[in-house]
Image 1 (cartoon, rainbow, N blue to C red):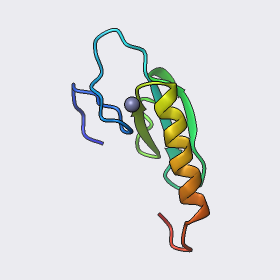
Image 2: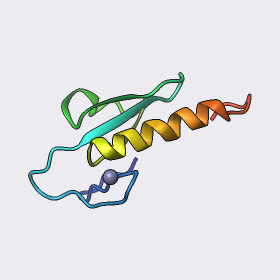
Image 3: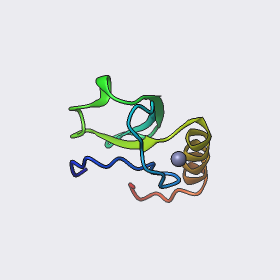
Length: 80
Ligand SMILES: [Zn+2]
C-alpha cells in the first residue's frame, strides 16, 4: 500500500481527521481470516505479509466483517 498522509476509511470513504482513533482490519496475505484492532503500533511495518485496511469505527468494522464473511460463503477455489 502506498504511503499517504491522507487516511480514508476503506469501507465508507470518510477522511480521517486529526485526533480521531480509528480501527484497522488486518488480513494475512497467505492465509484466510480477518482480524480487527486499534490502528497503529503492532501492525505497522508488517505490510509485507499483512493487508491492512483503515476502518473509521465500529459500524464500518461490522460492515467489513460482513463483507468478508460473504466472500467466504461465495469464494471460489482460486486463491484471492
Ligand atoms: Zn467508515
